[in-house]
Length: 301
Image 1 (spheres, rainbow, N blue to C red):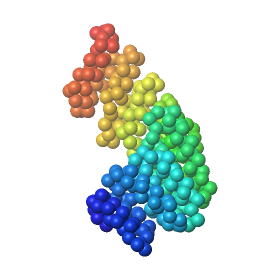
Image 2: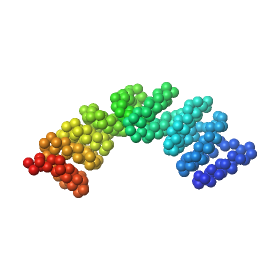
Image 3: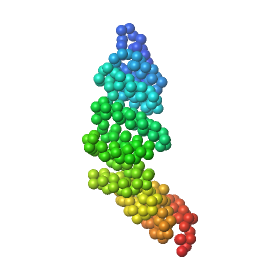
Image 4: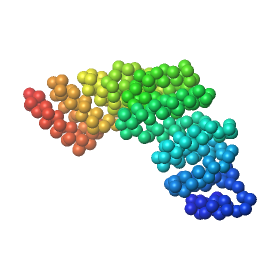
């Protein structure tokens, strides 16, 4: 069919009016794809309603495409309704697959803007995951990571750890670097640096490298917990891995060193960072100004 979505829609509408012509799965699918990709969601919605009005037509791929574009349009309720339609279908090739569930997990995880909203959506994710397992669909790494990430975002880190420990044993699916990164970030947010360090070391034994976000989270959490030597150790490890620390991380470490009365040590670290071109001139001046402003007496002494 035509590349232009509006021309495609015209052809679709014209064909619909022809005597003895009936759309099949392929014409519905192509039209919905074209309209969805062009963000013509209202027009797409009209075609979807026509699909739903025809008994015993559809395919898993068609319904997954509909769900995908409804989630892109932020029409989550419509996406869930399509999922329910699939669940109730008498045709086995229209039932939800692992891809269907993963589309919904991704959409639900993208909705949260704070821990309360994430907590609300996490309950839906948890119910969907249970349905999926009960229906005999084996979770893959994406769906398991969705559970881990969802629990971390909703501040249920122990539940995230439970899923993590079940991955290889119950679901025969080994954690990947994303699994570890979600957990390290969640543990650090709760100040559980010992657990986070254990996971960092476990990552290394499996050939994974923590992400920049994980390292920054760990360095910040260690510094805020007063573990300055450990924070500096992981800061240099972060740098050796070619990741970049953010300004907040540098400031947190330097601030804690100086707060412990080791201002000279803090100034030397800042100088090292500048000499290695790890902070530009603007960042160096900003950090120096903060240290001089807050710890002026210590520097003078």
